[in-house]
Amino acid sequence: MENVFYEGKVMWAQIDANMHLRHSAYADFAAQARLQMLENSGFDARLLEKLKIGPILFREELIYMREIRPGDTVKVTCTMTHCRRDGSRWSFSQEIFRGDGVKAAQVNVQGAWVDMVKRKLSALPQEWADTFMNIPKSKDFILEEVP
Image (cartoon, rainbow, N blue to C red; front, side, top):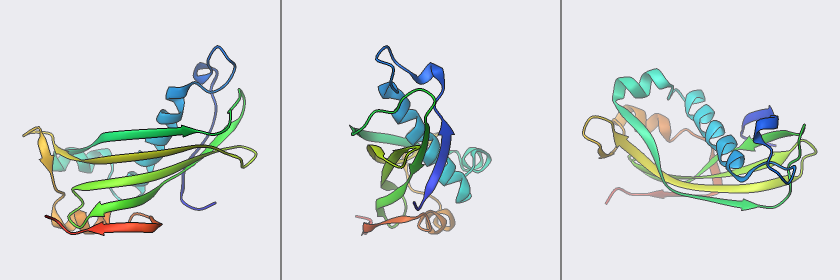
């Protein structure tokens, strides 16, 4: 399994009344994997604070395939599927696997960067846009020229 950015045990607080992983916990695992992927690429909280920029989501799609039960572990992958050359808009595809290796969910997100001072969408500074482009990409990755 490639591009695993989060691995962890399911906590009791993440279980719903049906004794499986609650729906929002899937999104939490995916978000944690994306943040770890960014951090591994040099985009840690200190840098984002210094650049006064942060990631936001426009769309998050979760496709549930199999149950995840109490006491199980999860592994979450992440690959970039689409990005503008300046890094201003991007999409990621993520897979959540149970401890037995069965794919339990697919998560697809579309997002951008926001300037935290101006509260407007923003591109990354060029040096960081180049670094952002080093994030693992899907086999069907699409690079979009800036309009």
